Image (tube, one colour):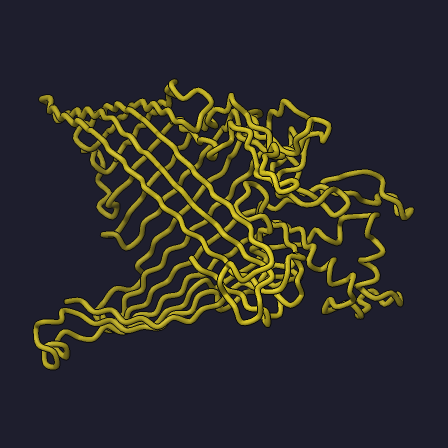
Length: 511
């Protein structure tokens, strides 16, 4: 990858990083990944419509990466070479990982009426502290297809299946978690190393997730309608957590295994085919899901999640026993005397529920119109963008006086700074049209008359992604995460780049 940001760009001329105007970035990465597997499957049919399927296998995967990143700042105007800059930062990252697994599974199927499954999986990885020990994860499941029994006579039902499953799985840490790294430094022209501020954890283990779920699948009227329902309870033990540590230790951050997290929720999916004839075909899929989480055990005092904000004065996402892992806590003035009375829970980034809606209309088998929408109900964000614009008096409603008390909205919010974090905790629910598309498939008769039989199909279309959004959130977009993919720390906003909308044209040709 080669990125060039010339001196005349606005954000370069600001020189916010203090390393000079104009930047050139050169990155080269070599990845070599290999995997292998050996599987054995044996099926044995027992008289009486019983089928036994035995499976076993070994798998392995190796991941190797060598990446070099060169960043040159303070470019000579008109130059793009990395050697034409005032400062050059060099970084090389080498990562390697070896994973090995085995599994065994037995499935008993009685005439597609009752299906029972039991299995065991073992995993080991060089990512773990103990690289030679297999971590074992068992599973059990059962399914009963009621419509296949002789006593079932309701012809409208294509399928009525009841199912239940229990199983365990693991989630390994990221590369390098068990090591304390050394960073390069030059002092007086001599090369040396400094200990990284993140302390290694040499006993790191995978998280262990145990889930119990049950549900049913229903289909009626030759697939014109189907319903899927699943309820679950997932317990996560030995969670991989990151926390800040006391500076007196010589470090700033560390990863550790600890605590227990419980997730409960359910999911519902409904698929309908209300109209299906030569003129119009309407396919509709609606999904509903909700989840609640609680930290049931935590062997350390409550702490701010990494990427969970900048302290209780502005609001933060705090990991605390007996509370949601996505709770937002902050200072607040509960008695109205103008001073903070302590730290309280002010919100939660997790929504109450979410729904998605997909509809496809096909007219005369040639024209099709698709619409995909997403509804998120509830949940709050930490909007620190509004704080920054308030400080400079540039918030859209800074000068408005909604309360009619003679104090502008912006000054009211600034007056709460250091007293309450409530102004920064804002509702972040939304209804979004994620995608709209219109497509046309050229009829076969026209294709053959124009192009012969060499072209089997042509499909033309246009689609828009994220064209519309309705939300009470006071910023660009409620779907924000200032700290990228840090777990549980969604919903923290500090001057994000506006979310993109795109218009795409499609041409598909089948030969």
